[in-house]
Length: 636
Image (cartoon, rainbow, N blue to C red; front, side, top):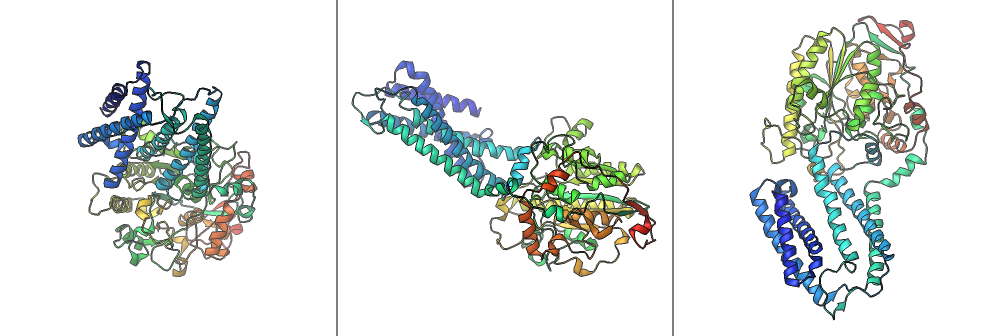
């Protein structure tokens, strides 16, 4: 209905233009089309800006359904039509872009080039602005890796802002720029014999080209600055041996598993930060949004980067979005931009030379499942988990195939967390009944930007929608953990809950003090008795990263690691300093971030190389519960 109304009114304005300005009849279709496009674009922009200022919502999605908005649009469109006809009439009478007698067709090349350059410059500017508002502090590596990876399953909420943002804005600017460039070639209306020439065609060609080049340079420069693309030369030109120098190869590190293998439940909490807790607990809120999740932490271990009760890993290069976070915690490595021959979006090519937690547990006979409510194709995760561990993948696509949800069902990124928890309970029961040790991995999604997903069960007691979603998510995951604790397998099961990365919901953090160091939530429940008593100092003032979770998770299920290091990660339960702590704590963090931005010949030759030596179990042994071997070599 909205589209029909827009077209009809646009054509009506065009006919009014023809009637009042007595346009040549041969030009009627052209004038009607031009006026319909111009006036609708003007009206949409005005309505969109007005509604954003008033309600902080975008115009287009709502205009389809609300009669009040459609009435507003009709009024604005008619007003725009009157203004448009008046301006064209004024220009026709006194200020005209007159056609000169000689204007070779070859000059059309300059005109087309000007429009193309202007469109590219506008797209660079609007795309950059959309990217920063939508994704926050996106890094060059994240942007490039996402370009190499599949985007199937992306939330429609995010895509709506793409179409109503940079795409529409670019079309709007390009349309009017093209009118300026070509208005002398396509007469706007019948010209009077005597007119004042505001811009001769030759001058307009020159001005158009200069303006287009300036728009392109300005748009690109803006994008380079905001996305810090100047760092790309470090990735492709400069090299670093930092990763190789600090890499403990899981192929050669000796590991000891207990004879009775311990189950692992690993829960990634989308965008779950410690900043959501109260200031008394180390957060940034007046209210603790994570209660009762923080109460649950009294029963386990949480590693803080400060003296405060709650802190966590600090953000690192190659670990600031969901896929990269999972890679870090499973491989002990940052996620780096792939080479042309090694795309993250194809089977068997997702870090084929890496050894992951899934590889090791698969070798030890674990049954493994990955579950989340979106499509596993997004970001190449399907290829990662199929390549490393042969996981059973129960994603959005799989549950549709199983008939758990209708074929046309789509909520948020696929299906919501309320359903995820119920499906997870069923899968955990199945895993237990196999009689094998199991590794169950899941990720929540309701706290994803923008503003989170509001379940019908979410109490809306706070002004901020995102705050309500966060609080409900913390409550629901706690209920899920309590359910697990009531199951017969819990005694021999470790649960890890960790925020995958810092939230990208920029609006929620607008008033945050920039000096406040945001970290992600972490909690390990019911670790293996073999870790022993952990001194309090090991739980606070720790400088650590997501890649430290690789050996830490292995230790939590009773695996003894020779040297307490795997890849770049360090077992946090041990007294061994992390990579950051070895290099001065905060200074080590900054140094590592800088080094990760460089190209790594070792990473390319080893981790991205499908022909690199496969992982085998020759360095894995077993120990009997309660029997402490003197050394790994003695146990072997």
